[in-house]
Image (cartoon, rainbow, N blue to C red):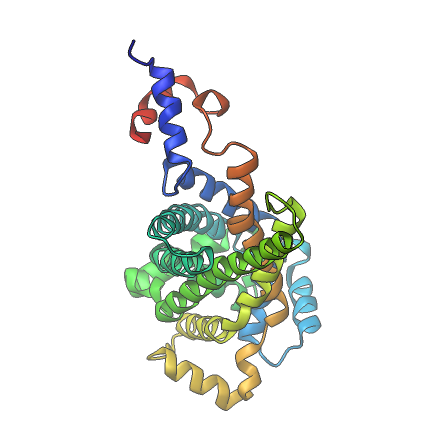
Length: 328
């Protein structure tokens, strides 16, 4: 007797569970990244962006200046542009890195090697959608005009900035600092995914030595691996400082020619330590994003039946009938 449609669909979903790059990675990536940004992600982003631009301010001074500029809502300045960016980059990241991770594992590579390659590939794929939104957020946070804080904090500043850049520079204007973004994103997610997998493997080996069978990490240990991976991943802070410098300069009409020129100018003005300005909020952001996009996605898949049977999902029956055949 031929299997029913429901049986075929469930079999297809189990087949997908062994790998990534499925339809659910697109939707889950968007949701995870938006929740990440809408909670602590955005305040960390605004904080480290200000420190990268105004490098003479200390960590605490920068935090206070943001509050003085627009109160609590100033920490979510540029949120509308950030939500667009988060939904698109989250989808692109999770789909691409999970697909690459799956392909690497099937080819016999270790979790750590697969993590570094998959993270780098996913980060590079993000650059196309991140450039414009990151430019708008940076322009709003670093704008020093009198009413910039009111417009930005109120949410109307993002649309105003988009119109302004489009009229003056066209689509090219939104991609100032794109080289720095590509370098940052590739190293960001290669490090976050790769180092997290490294710490997971280390914890797993320790469990095996202690004789626990089967060696499986607890949720707490998964979170610990994510925190360690997110912290170590901030070694590439110079790329982030250069990105902020290049986009802020472009917003002020004095764009830098290339990434190397930006590095040289920062070191000339602030010394080598200037390349690591904003490291504290960047660590917070790195950990927060890793917990959502690396650890969180893994826990969802393993514990919430991410790729489980269609009857366990919240997708309407009619919608299911359209996408389920694609899972085969």
